[in-house]
Length: 140
Image 1 (cartoon, rainbow, N blue to C red):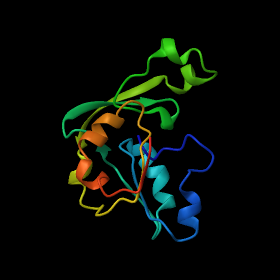
Image 2 (cartoon, rainbow, N blue to C red; image 1 turned 90 degrees about the vertical axis):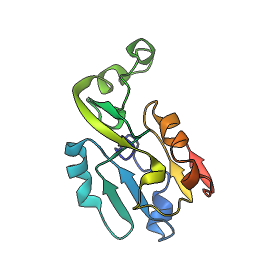
Image 3 (cartoon, one colour; image 1 turned 90 degrees about the horizontal axis):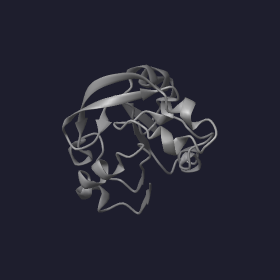
């Protein structure tokens, strides 16, 4: 959902590489979570949770892990962009429980928040206002 790779190098990697940041990523797709566990270090951790509004929802697992979302993609719109129709093809649907960002005890403070969840950003922001209120920057 949020931590799956869709770009070559995440925008925050320079901060992590210089020891200036710690990353907590959320990966509710358990297959993708298993793949990312190899990247866990003192500066990176991944949680097998979906951020959202605290309700039961459906996780749409897509062909490209970075396109996985709580929402099914609008293929009419994606057809205008090369490759996106294939990447956004839903290959599985899983029932999941979402967790409000403000309820995540593993995170005390947020300086920089990157949210790229294919349309679930509003749920994360609406249910993470306390933690986000102290952030220096949001990348949405």
